[in-house]
Image 1 (spheres, rainbow, N blue to C red):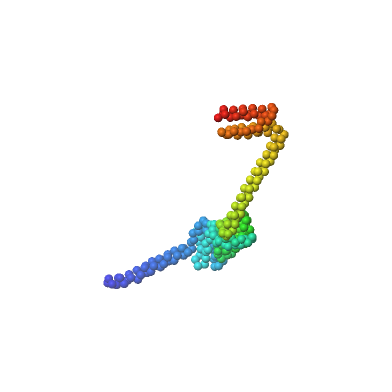
Image 2: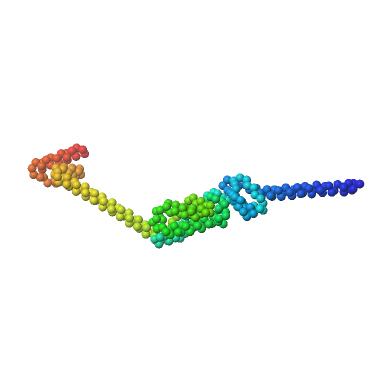
Length: 277
C-alpha cells in the first residue's frame, strides 16, 4: 500500500521541480537580457546607437536602454585627448635640418560625426598632425622657428582645427615641445652670439669715448672764453695732488699779481688740507 502511495505522488513532485527549473531559466534569461539592454553612461561619455545598421542618435549620460542583437552601440569619450606627435626630421625653408616634436590636444565635439565619418579618429588626428607639422616647419625659416613659436603653434592649431571639423573633432591647442638643432649649427650659433656681444661692447665703449670727447670739447670752449675758470681748475688739480704725502710739486710761478695770487691760493689750499688731516 505504501508503494502505491509513493507512485501516485511522484508525478506531481516532478512537475514542481520542472516548474522551478523553468522559472530559474527564465529569470536567468531575463537577467542576461537586462545586462545587455541597460547601459550606464557616465557624464563625460556618449553612446552612439545603431539599430539594424541605422544610426538613431547619441544618448547619455545616465541609463540607456538598448535592444540586444538588434542594437549596436559605440562608446565615445568627450574628454580632452592628448596626441604625442613623434619627433620629425624636417628641412626648413633655409635648408637647415631640425628635429621637431609636438603635442596636440583635441576633444570630440560631435560623437555621431566622429563615429560615422572616420574609422579611427585618434589615429587620424595623429597622422594628420604629423603631416601638417612637416608642412608648416618646412615653410618656416630657422630664426622664425626659434623666435616665433607661439605664432607657429597658433597656425598649427588653426589648420588642424579646420581639417578635423568635418570629423566632429575640435583641436584646442598645439604645442611644439622641442626643437633639436645639429651640433655643428649649435656651435656656430654660439660663436655668432659671442661675436655679437663683443660687437655691442665695442660699440658701447666707442660711444662712451665719443660722449666724453664731446664734453671735453665743450669744456675747452668754456675755458677758452673764461681763463679764470681754467686757472681755478689748475688750482683744484694741484690741491688734489697736494693730498699725497712725501710728494713735492713744482709749479711755475707766473709774473705779476696773477702769479702771487695763484701762489697764495695754493698755500692756503695746502694749509687747509693739512688742518683737515
